[in-house]
Image 1: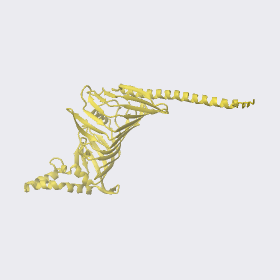
Image 2 (image 1 turned 180 degrees about the vertical axis):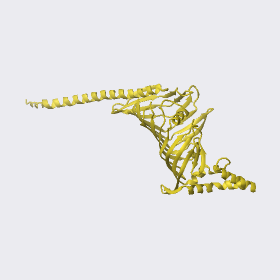
Image 3 (image 1 turned 135 degrees about the vertical axis):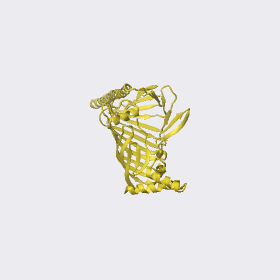
Image 4 (image 1 turned 120 degrees about the horizontal axis):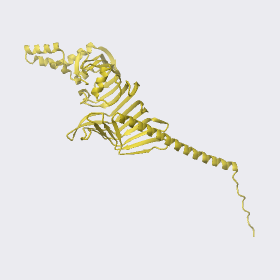
Length: 383
């Protein structure tokens, strides 16, 4: 009987075996090290978030969550807050804000940059009372850079925001936009000592007739300004804040602005201050394409109303009424186009984005607003 002899076993070289062992050991060490680093970075990010919450609590803004969770491994740190709420106890009466889920995330290599995503709806109410205002959006994201005691900048970007006033259980639309951005940067100073804030606002298809009738039509806006004169950024009512700015000789420095609707475009820059009685005072040099359309939308006939425009102009209209009843009223009806033409003639002819335009001053004189020679509005005191 014949038997085949077994094939000799193939031995793995000892050097190759050691390589595999070292490779597996290196992977284990790398995973363990990365895991440890993630938990360290997560703790730093969590500390940063806790620092923001603690700092806010000291100035009367109390943030709470129905439940909170930590995740994002291996490359991000994510803190999710369900049923988020904010109490602003420094205001009188205290105000309560509620919304859906909030997700705050940071990259492990950049724990002082916090990215947030916020779920609608948001409700605002006096503490213990039914909501007085609601807001909705399809997407809201924020970014916050800096340390709790030394923030550098914050950005808020929102798609399809809308906000409503609630009265007696019924909602009334106050404003809406397709897209809205607000960016704020600490230009100088600190939270506690004379902060100077650079502020940029971008809006697409914004409507807010309650703010000003001119914005009842869809409006695109791009405004960059600097706000100075604040003592600190502790919680204050806006009247108190504006009074503080006025007493310190602060300014609203409009570095650049562009506001446009379907029929007109306006750009400008300048500076505004506040008078002792809380009214805006200063001048912005503007360039307007479609001035006649803008004045019609403002309601240039305002100039022809008794007590609203030029005293001499109204005296002339009254004299015409004495000569022939109704003649003064007819003149008033025809005054709009003439005033628009007159304002354009007193300005400087120029071009804006390929369209014929006129450059002229937008003056704020103790609350009265003049576009060139025409009084177009009067602002309310800010305090």
